[in-house]
Length: 404
Image (cartoon, rainbow, N blue to C red):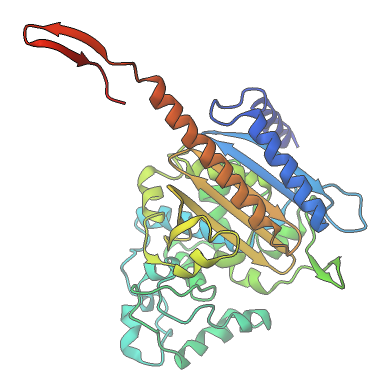
């Protein structure tokens, strides 16, 4: 409780000292749209965090943790973050690889010799990096239906002997949950520690993330937690938490609050180099494969010029700006996290309902903020320009001064 109080005071103290490029008016506009949009869709509950440089400059909650309940959502309410979990897998893998536990270019079969495709000649072409880069070459979402049927991982893995990649691994994109999560046994074999302990030791604890956890037990042990909701007959109804995707922890097993993810964004912006160095950050956000389908996403397509996948992160060209992004969707929850390294700005959105209003809120935020910052850039450039002065020389009159 003391740690939570200290952290909360630290966050509140930033509200009155907002960074020059993120104004109170911009935050007020975001909050108004955030609350109005959620109210229109009657979303039960949500939370957000805005990060600028090394501060969480605004955070808050909306609504309730469960329909019919009075328990409010706040900045510390824990949500399932679904595929936003992949960003943690990318960060953790980068740390462990740098420590020498495994190499990115090693064949997956070195650690999982029982793994095989239909055509065995593909086996040694599948490298560790391909798992987190979503470049295994396998048809998208292979065997997610078996995850949702509640099968254990050891019953799903042999199914890949029925498939071949659509291209050589490393050459094309195919979004995966099962194959992505093979990084977990590789980490466990090379460190002799379980995945949850590795995340706690290398990320959650050093970044002082107060409510983050891994797995169903971690979620249920969080007293301040949001329950999932799905819509039926025009109304939102709460559901019990489905355990299936928790069995694939790197892909979808992390639980976190807006505060937790705010601190995670601060690390992505380079302000915790003892946890994630600049080398780590550059490695996990380097473009691996193009993801053309992302440029056609509703509400995003008017902004996106190009899209790629890194290691557990998507790399978007949002107009003139690069945006590092990932979204998550699991029964009853939606989540999004994104940041601009150049602008040192980040946004977290968490919903306890399966509503696409999250895309409207996030794209509007980034469009407005990028436009405002680009206008600031132009104003700053013009402020440096002075009218050219006339000077008289032996050869006549000339103009001298900066060209604007």
